[in-house]
Amino acid sequence: MSQKQFTLAFLQNVLTLLNDENQLCKVSSYFQQEDPNINRYLCRDSFGLHGWNDENAGKFSAVIAEALRQTTTAFFTKDDEQLKLIQRYSDNIKTNLVPKLTANVDTNNPMIAVKLNVEKKLLQLTADKSYFNNPYVLFGGLAATAIVATVAWSLTPK
Picture 1 (tube, rainbow, N blue to C red):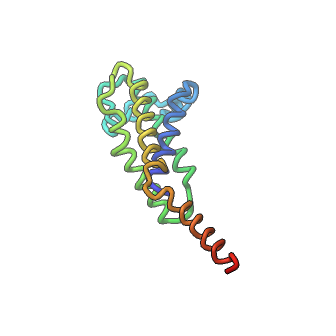
Picture 2 (picture 1 turned 90 degrees about the vertical axis):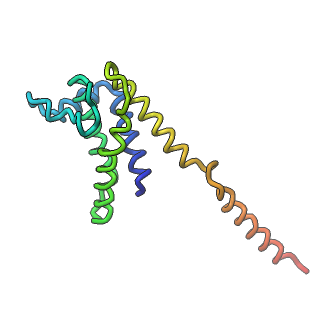
Picture 3 (picture 1 turned 180 degrees about the vertical axis):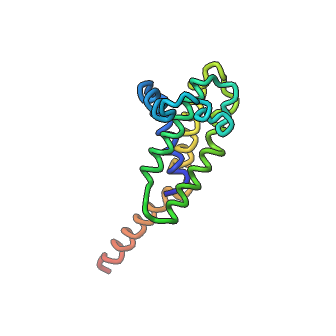
């Protein structure tokens, strides 16, 4: 598991939740646990949600919590080193990635702006993974062809 794989899975989970209004309401309700003191669930300082209304801040915080839960569950292992990596990746998402996704969004309609930022980040991360950007992409095929040609040449009668 790499940080990139973990982040891609997390962003995909965020996007799935943001695109499903029923899931969005459900995770928000679970996250706040019907607690009347919703301020503790808004994560304004942690995620840079200053200026967001309570409803949007609560829903977005719930989405992040649920997406992290889903992602860590998907990568869960009993190996201590892997668990430490999962924790480090999760902390990095909460402290670095999420505030970047929410930076400079329109606070009147932040969910749409954040969704666009998530989509952009997903495209950026998947484009980085493209084989066309890899200068060694043809090496495996070329090496296999060379081996086959060498074997064929060596088997020809002389």
